[in-house]
Image (cartoon, rainbow, N blue to C red; front, side, top):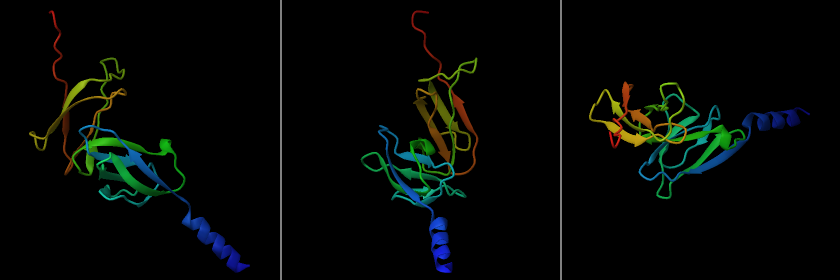
Length: 157
């Protein structure tokens, strides 16, 4: 009888795992950050590593097909249980922004420029996505980032 309980305990403690390979068709971005929201990463694909002091967040390099490679994580997950975001640089410290109008409404497809205040020549210029999100701008150490918006040109004025 004790043997049966012991086997059940081992099965319960080992838990189940899920595997995920995400395809992203980003044209000029090769780095990504993936957050499994509390599901511990058990196995990383080639070109990926855990973010410092995290067990459920990794950064990596997309392969030539635009795939992350296979992640194995604890528990059962669906597409709603993780997020994958494009990154500028392959560093642990990252921050992204959401572009909004003055009244706080999301403003998609807005041109922006992010500057690393620790290294002012390190900049990224892009356009926010349909949810107003910018790229995750990553730095080697904690640094202040500045976001600016190039002046829009109004024709006929």
